[in-house]
Structure formats: C-alpha cells, structure tokens
Image (cartoon, rainbow, N blue to C red; front, side):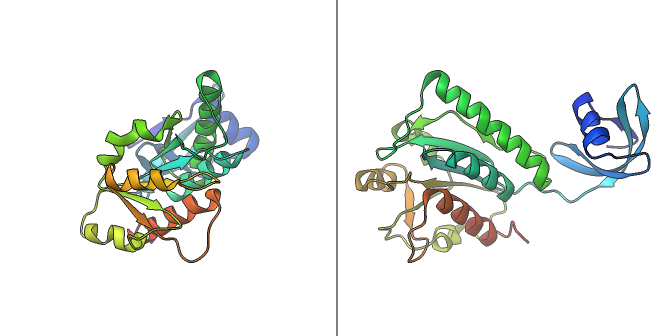
Length: 236
C-alpha cells in the first residue's frame, strides 16, 4: 500500500472522539492481512485521511490453530474467545459434548455466536492482529469427524492422557512452517472416556497431558494454545 488512505466513518469517529488523535499523529493502519505505519494528514468531510509510511511486522501466525471448545457454563466462552484471539487462534469452534451442561440451538446459538464474534473483533483491535478468528456455530462432536481428521495434528488435553505432551505431538512437524493444528478442550465435566477413545481412534487425536494439575476448562484452552504457539516459535 502506498500514498494516502481514508478511514471509514466508524474508525474516524473513534480516532477523533475517543482516542483524540490529531494531525501529525502516527497510527497503525490495518489492511488485512497487512499492517502499516501511517500519519494523520487531516480530516475531510468528517473522515480521517492518513499518509502511509511503511509496512509493519506481520502479527498473524503461520500455525493455524482452531480451538474446539466444549461448551462451558455462564459467560466463560466470552473470556475464552477473547484470550485465544489475543494468542493468535485462527478459529474457534464451540462443541456440544456429553458432559456439557449448556445446550444451544436455533436462535439462541446464533445470538451467542454473534456475541462471541463481536468479542473476537474487539480483541483483534486491542492486540494488533489484522484478522479476527472465525467463531462458528456450536456443533456436536460427532459432526466434526471429517474436519478433525483433516488436521495436521489434533491435540486433546485430557487428565488420563497416555500420548505424551503437546511438545511430543508437535515434534514431528518441527521443520514445517505452515501447520493446521486443532486443540480440543472438554467442558467443566471433562471429556468422557468414550469421547476420548473416539477422538483417538476415529479422529486421529493425540491425548496429551498439561501437567500434574487439573485445569479449569477456561484455563486449559488458553494454556494449551500458549504452549503450542510458543513451541512453534509464534511468540518470539
């Protein structure tokens, strides 16, 4: 991108009235999938005009991680979506599992998903990402078999895991730059043994440990994603 650009009405209003930016101030301009450093030149018809200076370092991860999150209770999903967006998740798929207390369908599911997507978009602005992760409608675990099987690696943290650690699951892909990773987290009651068996045998999942302590569902996904991103060099 070169030359001048104009912010849309919403972003112009936010820049002028909330951030109180003025002519000569430097700003980050997002034009997905890239970011640029720009300087405000002025305002024309209530729209901020900027001059592009140079590209900035990319913030999107080459490792494409989808979080498959067993539907939690209350507003925990909002926290999960916000934090995994900051950590670089490419998509979030809520999953209806055997031990889920919450059941969403129809209009309720659509309304919740719209809310979660809005939270993801807001988190993107805060953390300087350029692409918001796709937050999908809740799906039953059994309906995801083909998608899960098509990943390069499916990581399933489970308290009774026998397949090593996240490091072990990612080790075979150490030399590959782009990777499609799934992380599946159970709801508050955890992953039922028959679900764990299905994930291992039918979806190719690696049942891994997150250490000696049992983490809450809202902690486990964030921890697993952080570990995976760090091991893949996405946090350097």
